[in-house]
Length: 309
Ligand code: HMG
Ligand code: MG
Image (cartoon, rainbow, N blue to C red; front, side, top):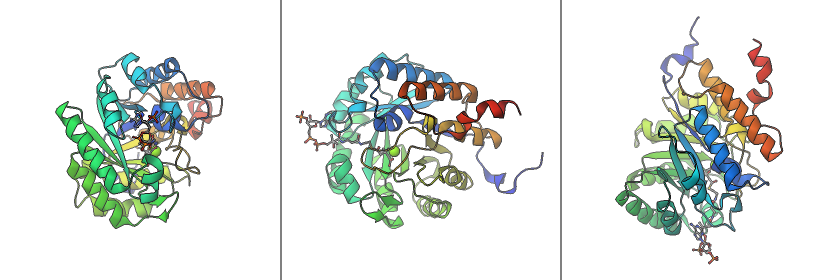
C-alpha cells in the first residue's frame, strides 16, 4: 500500500494515558460508587493500557465525584503492567496519596491566573510554591510526578493565552522535576497551527519525549491536533474512553478526545499502542450504560458497521 506523505516521520509507538476514570468521571452528574469505579478501571487495564489516571485527592466539596479515590487505589486489582496515577493539588492530597498504592502523581497548574484561582483557590505563584514542596516530598518517596499545565490556548474566564506565558510555565514545571509535561487544552479550542507553534518553541527547551498533550475536544479538532503533534514527533497523548468528561471549572468544555477514536486513527497509521480496540469499545458501551448516556465516540457508535468492512 502507498504511504501517505506526511506519515514519513510519525512515531512507531504512542503512549496513551487513559484519563476517563478521573477527567471523565469528575464531570459526570451521576456519581459512581467505589465498587463501580474499580470495575471500570479493571476493565480499562484489561484493554491494554499501561497508564491509567484513576482519581484525584482533592476537596470532596469541590469535586464530589472523586471522593474516596484512596479506596479506589487500594482496592483495585493491580495489574503490574499498569501505572495507576492520581491528581494531587497540595500536601494534604499528597499525604493521602502516600497512604495508597499510587504509582505516580500528577500536579496541575495553569497558565491563567483566573483558572488557577477558580480551580485550586490560589495564584500561579502560590501553586508553584505548593508544588515545589509536593514534588520534593514525592521524590523522597520515589513517586514520579507528572505536571499538567492547563489553559495552553485559552482560559474559560480570560480568553486567549499567550504562547510565551505557556512556554515559561511549562519550563518551570520541567525544572521542578516533573517527568512529563501534560499540556492541557482545557477549553478544547486549539488548532493545528497553534499546536505546532507551541511544540516548535517548547521543544527548544524541553526534550520532545517529555511533552504530552491533553486535548479536550470542544471544537472537534482534537484528533487533527493530535495528528499535527504526531507529525512533529510528540508520542504521548491523554484520551478519555467514550470522550467522557471535562472540568467542573471550565463549564463549556467537553471531554478529552475519545480513546476509541484515537486508537482507531493510530491503528490506521500502523502506530502501536498495545490497546485492544474491540475490548475498548465494549468497555465504552459498559461505562455509558452505567452513566446512562450515549457515547461521544464516533467509532463506538458505528463499530458494528466498521467490523463488516
Ligand atoms: P482550599 O479551599 O484552598 O483548601 O482548596 P483549604 O486548605 O483552605 O481547605 C478547605 C477544605 O478543603 C478543608 O476542609 C480541607 O481539609 C479540604 P474542611 O475543613 O472545610 O472540611 N482540603 C482537602 N480535602 C481533600 N483533599 C485535599 C484537600 N485540600 C484541602 N487535597 C483545593 C484547595 C485545591 C483543595 C480545592 O480548591 C480543590 O480541591 N479544588 C479541586 C481541583 C480539581 O480537582 N479540579 C479538577 C481537576 S483539574 C482539571 O480537570 C484540569 C486537567 O484535566 C488538565 C486540563 O484539562 O487542562 C488536569
Ligand atoms: Mg482535563
